[in-house]
Length: 411
Image (cartoon, rainbow, N blue to C red; front, side, top):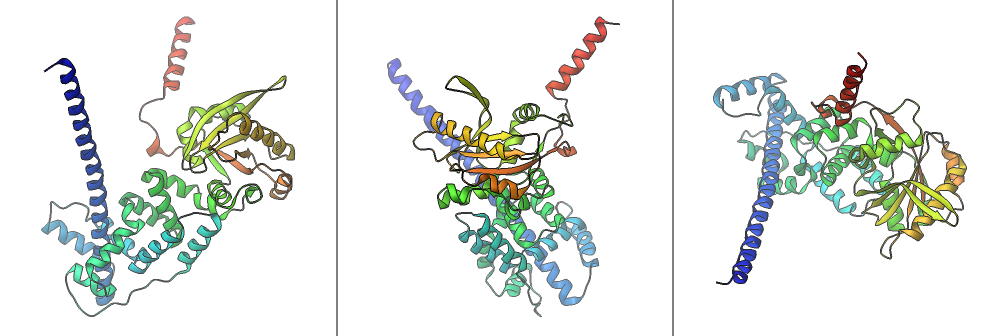
């Protein structure tokens, strides 16, 4: 066989191996996901079963303690059935009865195109809904009992469970939400966000602690999107905007200026983009534009994949002033002219200030043709212990090394 034929055969075989490898990797992900969903369904059934017998027989809280002990004695190799975890299973089942899961699925169908108003309405409906179950008189195995409780075949109950966002959220995240005592609708929203954005349980905990739902949905936002963008785009832009933004900038000076904040944001760009939200990509910092005989520098430029649009971000280390809107409007015009392609939507401006009078800010946007949003931002220096690296950062190592060399030079 010629070398050429050998190379073609090798290329084909490499492609074959790559395809097989890709399928194996995808299968592993599917198996892990399926295993997680099955474990959650098992926990949910267990929780329903325990709650049912507590209510039926009036056994009280000691049921869980005795059950955990019995499982430990009879199935010593089985993990995950501690008194604490069994208690969470009961809370899990109580928080998400079958009718709640069905409502989640119905809500999913209504929120294919998200908007702040629509999400807020659906969350309020779920928060106010009352989902209860009546105990029955029969005693059966777990599956039969759960089937009796909900008056449905267990396979149909499983289908509902698996179709709900509850099945796509990991157990550690569920425990965090249960500990947070969130209303049903707000839990649903965090679940959806966690799945869509691939949050770890630690990230979810931070988002709940910083009250992301209020910052993104229930707080009053200042923007002119409705007047300057078409309906689907304006709804999505308003949905993606937060107020306030909370940036974790450890090491920032107490009275930081715009440049220091920009440097920190770029230095910690991953955390910054996480706070900005889903589908934001970093484009440039202090982007230079020569307009006429003058030089201009836009603070930060991002690209939003969901919006298919450039986002010009102006940072101000002071409270909002009306003239800031004019400056941002100018940069939007420049980016529209210099960067925006034929398939990009209108460039959007985001003004981040250290506080604002909402009435003044809304008046300031009146009359502008370009879409502008105005939000507060807060600087947080508190990094949860479980997110800190056990090793020092490069900067810390360099600082220590410099200090050591200086001492060596000047004993």
